[in-house]
Length: 284
Image (cartoon, rainbow, N blue to C red):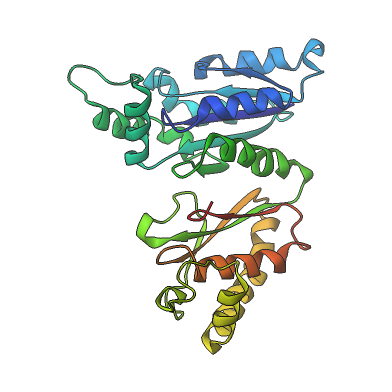
């Protein structure tokens, strides 16, 4: 049977992810105590559950700390017939605080003596046993609900074809490195189209920006080095049964240089990795 564990800090999008899996035909349960996971797995393997695509469970900090600490052992003790994956959703603390402020929801860990910011930080500590076991981590700081639902379909469910799911995304260092990145390449040494008046309002998908960057010898050298690195090591990650790989390409603002190289790498690996996806964090 297929078992997907969804976890993450409050406000990171766990309910959206669980609803998406429900729409995809999974038997879903929210806020299941870790101690009841073995019983659920045993029940989900009964014949009456055979019509479901799999089972998805949301586990969060509302569990008692003792049970969260036992998460790794509980997962290790599951039957060998269970194909399990752990999806951990997270976001920058500033994004989480903003979401709670906008919705006026109460964080599950807040008390009279623990304000929101402290509760968010404490929650990350409590969920460490699950985050350290995650097979896929998604940073939802810059994602809309629709982008998160697409990410679940493409990255989590799309990986079940047996091929490694690869995400290549551009970003701007001024807004921080994506927390879910496995490999990060800094391309800020390239000449910046931002300082060319005619190119400033364009981005790396535009022909004029491509022409400008491709006219710089350094661009071709950097692209070749990154491609050679990925040609060497992506197959090794795949051989180690890695299901997901996130490659982040960063420049200052995430508009020109990183977008251009991300597009070029994506096109290069499309045939080799059918489960490849592209995302431009700062222009989408």
